[in-house]
Image 1: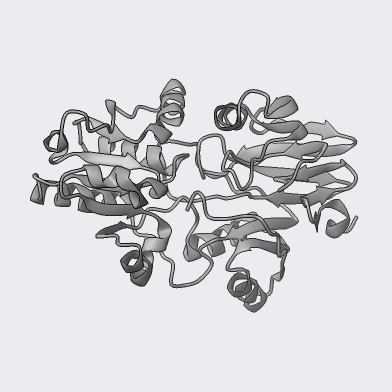
Image 2: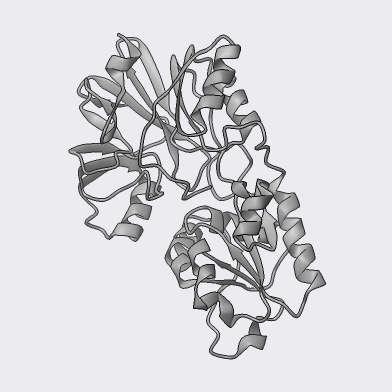
Length: 335
């Protein structure tokens, strides 16, 4: 069958007519398959949801236990039949519980990557390339300018600054699901054994990560009841939005940091008032995107949410058929 008959865009999201399901729909549907727990991919209100157990748990934490009518947990690598269509979930390396979804029917296999990264990350299972006929890739950082440095080097820069300015606190903006926990784990792996102070918005997700065997060390609430000096030399992690309000002004002469792939663009860091940009991304960079495309062996590439045109053009120059999907409703929550 033609690939476009197996999966194609609709206003709700990617739709599979033979299996009657959507992948990461942006509005409530009868049957949703969810790649990961970020809010632009995982939304509440679906009649039924199929995802990894960790993604289901994360959705429950974020939306409440009644986020869907019914739920089903997918085991990684296990085939599930939906109206004659074979479905399987495979690690995406994006955040805890994230998965690519392979859809196979009548000899055609399409793999929807969701969001993915290729850098090693102790807080989630690593990406696994899956052979397929069509690979649907994200392109958040789909321009040659985006080449992410080793995350260990970026964390070393943070620790060096903390040592140089022991009287100041370092406020690290990091998205609540995935990025924040990755930053904490990187700090621990670099030998940082002091308490890490966290904004309340990170508490439940960080506790869940620890319940899944991901060691984050001692985490303390970033409250200032004892006075500003309690946070001299401290590293404080919180969602980026928290640093734009009064909460951030409670800390002693804070150094503003932001962990994001977008920090490669210095003007963006400057506009955001970021003193110490940390280029730590939960998405693949340009070299990783192009290498992954080749690893899948796919004869056709569909590009979505990001810099679609550049990656489509690269595929064409490589002799690989490609087209943009122009899906809407996907942002950069986990960049």
